[in-house]
Length: 289
Image (tube, rainbow, N blue to C red):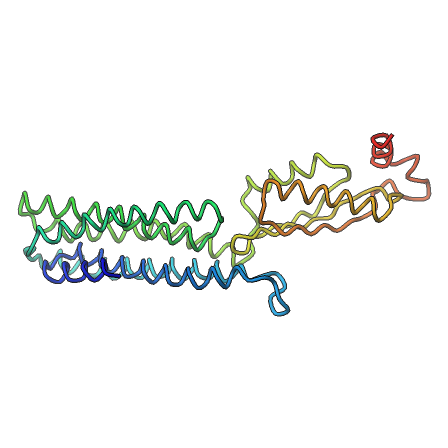
């Protein structure tokens, strides 16, 4: 908060649209961190009567709001930059502005690394988009610093608004992918293809035939459900043991996952006993022997 206030002061004193854009960006970082803090707490609550599938969508909604804030900030920066490009003004207190931006870049990098590690550990989309905020802050601060230095050396006033436009374009590029991901999760789009193939590979190693695989993600929690055909002559206990083994294997690769398995009798089950016609049953009995 203190660094954001210093940026605002430096931007106002210098008249630099680049520094002002950084102040706006930092203010959004603070808002992003506050939103992430409250939504992650909410998303971490256990399932209840009103939310039987958990509260993970709170986190996804947070990511969507944060991404939209970034896009709005980029729009404001772009408008200010175009105005300064049309009516360029000399920069005041250049040394102060460069010092503030340099310290800002260093501080943002430290916070980015912390958030990035936390996102990798928790697979939290809210923390990940918060880390993207700070990464964008690092890169845009570096760009503004270079622009201020170039203006000091050359006297070219158009550099400041030009770097502001570049900052706006970069912010939109960074937020776009997260915006798409958040919308996909809210619309219950299936998991990425690589994860789908990994889950299908796991299912192929077990007895029985899995079909009607459905997946989605809610916050940091993956939801996987499918039908599993097992021998009709197996007992409920034996069928349940197979399901436990499948679930345990999926959770090994995807720890925070809700697995729902619907058991069905295999196609070989019919008038003839599965004890003589079902390869799954025979294989299971052979393994026990």
